[in-house]
Image (cartoon, rainbow over all chains, first blue to last red; front, top):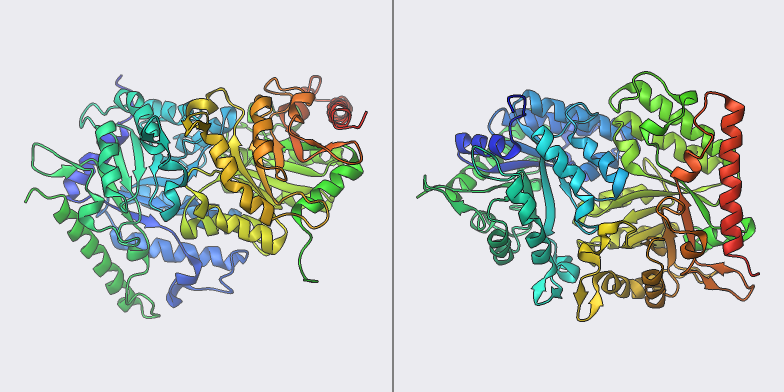
Length: 307
Length: 307
């Protein structure tokens, strides 16, 4: 017992409490949006200089956050599109975040069977090549395929966020289809409750099993909360797809301290590419990044405050 | 029109016809199973020498196949677990397969929304960093999230294999749940038919939209075939999970030539780690690999033959 690593949700939520806000910085390096200040070479995905540009941009943004956020969420696709050099950038960004005392949730939405699922769960191995703190996964293949991630959550203090109701317009195609009167996303949520309970953090009561629920669907989000009372919510795309701060924290719960907690709210485009950041002047760029950061922290701090 | 790249399914099926079998070589470098002949260093995922070992092993296997197969299927998870060096190995293996005239289907089961889906679709960009011929994808997030892959299929002669009914025991958890009396996997299959028709190859009639259906579920496989008459089937885990050659090609259709066609059948463990291949003698290892290869080609050739 004394060797057990700190529980993922305990670490995350205690940090959120200290900081006073649940903001998660999404790291999605859209190549065409990277400001002039950081651009190098052709900026095409296959060009080695593009990976260097992505790294210098993300590293500079991350440095502006210092120890002011609990967690960052790199989006794997944007690194993968740069080939192996992109993965090298990801590894460097993960190391920088850890050095800043920030947890890393890799948004990779993986899902596969048997030994392949175990290989994906290596992302959560503290002795592995990448060593992230939490991973997003896709439930379509069935509960047995999620087991390797939950095993890492239990043995190594890691977190697992299962896709439940995604923020896109077409998420209803399958997720909203009714099974015995209940939409598929609720069936998925209900089937995870036993595991969520078993992965409860000893200090905060929150689970190392989290769920992904888009801020664009606040009512569905409340229904998922009813089915999974102690699951952390990853609410993506705050600020980008129309969901406001109040909607984003709709499924958070009121604690005895009066604050609302129970998840993290991620923003990427709004924080990486805010108004005024398309410049080749360093000071102007820094001011734009800092202003977007402070505004998001203020909005989410206020939306989760007791007042 | 004259600039249109060759259609994925036309290229694949014409090659399968020439070769007389639908075998796909699965490249899943399970680290503990790599024979002594190729092992280097600690063989732990984080050790740089492990990536070199995985490369020398896979490259040697691939060389034994020469131009005797239409397609290879690297499993992304096993490369990713080695970090950026693993992606470098994957890029080298893709280049070797292409040099041997073999197509590459990357088994990555990706799925995400909006611009992230577009970033994953970069795997299918002929000018991208990795340049594979086809990709497996997960439908849970909805049809709008699959559009970027289909766009690449149309514009660049690429293939997309959508997960429908997976081979694992727990695949029924969600895939078999009934929606208006029809299991989810059939709902997914039915919803893809219009796109499958629109991506029909001009020469063979087969579609660049394929589906993944486990050989362990031959009856379900026939139902998916009824819903998607011109979709290519990727039948994984042939030989490993108990499905035989006849079951594997159950959803293939009889052509006017009398042969059964309409997909590819993948085997990994049985071809990479056959009996007798755990040796440090090169000639013994080559004989074991060749024997497994010849047996699989013979079995699948026979199962799809007209006689």
